[in-house]
Structures are given as C-alpha cells and as structure tokens.
Length: 170
Image (tube, rainbow, N blue to C red; front, side):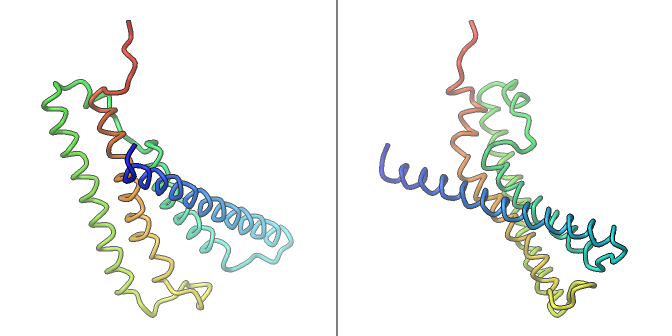
C-alpha cells in the first residue's frame, strides 16, 4: 500500500471516528432534551422550546447520520440491480449513479448555503437567540459530508458493483 493509500485510509478512519463522536454527542443532547421535556411537562411546567429544539436535533442527527451511513455503505442502494446488467453497461450505470448522487448533494450544498444567506436575521420562534441560519447550516454541511463519505467509498462501491472481491459460490 502506497503512502497516498495509507493517508486516505488514515483520513477515512479519522473521519469515521469524527462522525461517530458528533452523532454520539447529538444523541446525548437529544435524549437530554426529551427527558427534560417529559419531566417538565409531567410536572405541569411544559418547556415552550422543547418541541422546536427536539425537531432541530432530530434533523441534525438525521443529516450527520446519513453521512455516516454513506461512509459505511449502509444508505439506500440496490447494487444487485446493477449486478444484473452486463459488465460494460454496469460500468456506465455505476458512473451515472455516482453523477446523480454527487449532483444531488452538490445542489443541496449550494442551495443550502443560499437558504442560509436568505434567512439571515431570522431566529427560532421559541429561542430568539438561536439564528435560523445556524439551524439550517445542517443542510449544506450534511450534504457536503455525504459527498465526502461517497468519495471515500468509491473504490469499494465500484468493486462491489463489478463483483470484484466477492467469494464465488460453487
């Protein structure tokens, strides 16, 4: 394995750990919010911000979780359909599928930044000190992270679709 491959593998491992830590912190924060919300509601002192904050936390966890799922190859995909085509067509369809994925997430990143710009000055309804642009930043950031994850899996995905590295059944 060359130095570039070692560097990529080290980056992939670090990126994997980074996403795990981010998701762990987000899950703890969301669980804490939900517990506080339930306890306060049960005591008759419902928190006005609970529903809005819990929804935002779920969205953030979903975006970061999808980047992690993409890194692990666990996102929605049907490689068996691609494998049913002849090898030449399979290669073309693989490239087309990756272009569609990158195109979609590039658009999400681009328009996510535009949305952040357009909503400058707006805040959450219940917590007016939290800017909406911070809340909506998860769209471009999560989309970019998804593209990073897809890039780190390109070789693995290609080998999977082409049937390389699989054990042949007898």
